[in-house]
Length: 280
Image 1: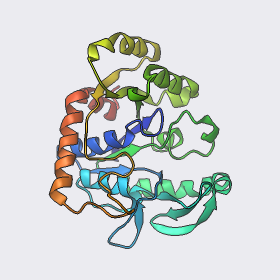
Image 2: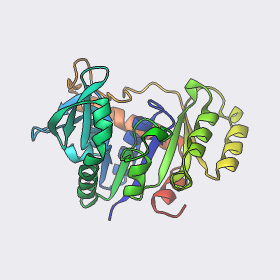
Image 3: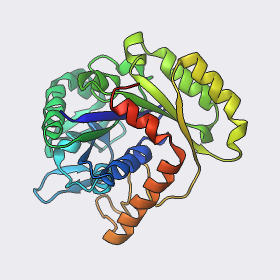
Image 4: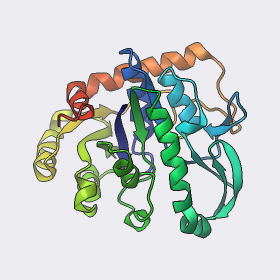
């Protein structure tokens, strides 16, 4: 059975996609067969695959980073916004129906089986699944019937790395608050945290990091400095009109390598390996 690791964030745009994409390439470069997985994505950037199915552009990017062929199982539930309160649901690569937000959330438990089916399919064919959450697990109003954050982590028995964005301010509070608002079983899934988008001298952060490690009982895997990388959060390497991808394969691959080297330099990969292996 494949091993897995899940990347969750304290908020949207905390850096989940960047960390997920980088880990896909880091482990693929080790000769491991890797697949990304994001159970649900909401974006206007859908990409049509060779078989006619659709997934989010960011999962196409992650598949490329993993040196894997993109497929709908990597993103079984895709919501394409149409209005402020409504979206078109694409289920397992095919357009399913339009939903208003209230109805979707009342019926979302129906899609949980499709999510698990797609995950189990990938699990049977890959050695490592790098899973990306959505939004934040701290949205406890959405915890019931959840299959995108902690609900998914429990479903597939995945250890979680929590990413916080220091650029917004209050990163220690956001990491601590996210962990502590969860119930005990969900909180136990979090094995480490990462601080993203830091500018300045990392030594200034160390007292806060050590205090947070002591309070939560988990380590900081690293601090990622702010950097300019040609990969957007949800619309990675997608340019202009939704679905119009930059068509320079070498340029995209160079960006994946650049990102992987950057993240590998700043994260404790040995500690992450132990988490994935279930030793921490």
